[in-house]
Image 1 (cartoon, rainbow, N blue to C red):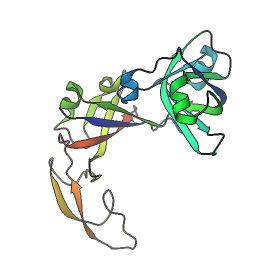
Image 2 (image 1 turned 30 degrees about the horizontal axis):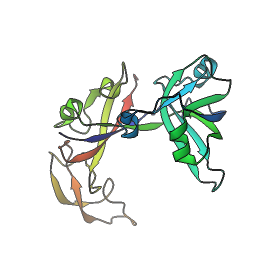
Image 3 (image 1 turned 30 degrees about the vertical axis):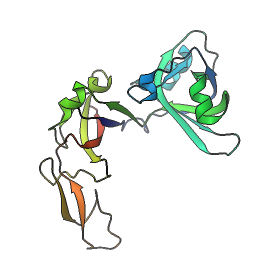
Length: 217
């Protein structure tokens, strides 16, 4: 059975982003299941209803951006919103064990906003249904729990990191003479190199499938 990491990009998110400063609090009552640990599902982020409306995350997915107090390193959580009446204003709740493992703390200052990108892992019949599709094809967003949207396949890569290219036909792996990305970034005009790449068709040994949400024009 294929095992794909589906990366979703939301092109509207940067245009309509509302960044809200929040307190991030660990709460043992927020679920963190095995499916979430293995990235088959996004972790739950609980918020009050006022913050839910303020964020206007139309697909219900947000990113929390924070820094570790001890090192200053940037950390983030991307998860699905879950409204709750008992969450204080300008506070978000995440699973306490998850937050401690990530940051070493049970409370942090951060900011939350509509997610620009996230990823979901699939390895069941949904993954099988993707095999044979090509760059440029569209699939129903329900494959990863998004309703009433289409996802356009924009590329992908295999376990070695070799990228799919739209101009190479089929589920192949081959060396090709390239003059630009994906697969080669020239350092000077006219430079060309042979690089190993993948064709434009999803094969079972592809591990990442890149997609973008399609909005009506």
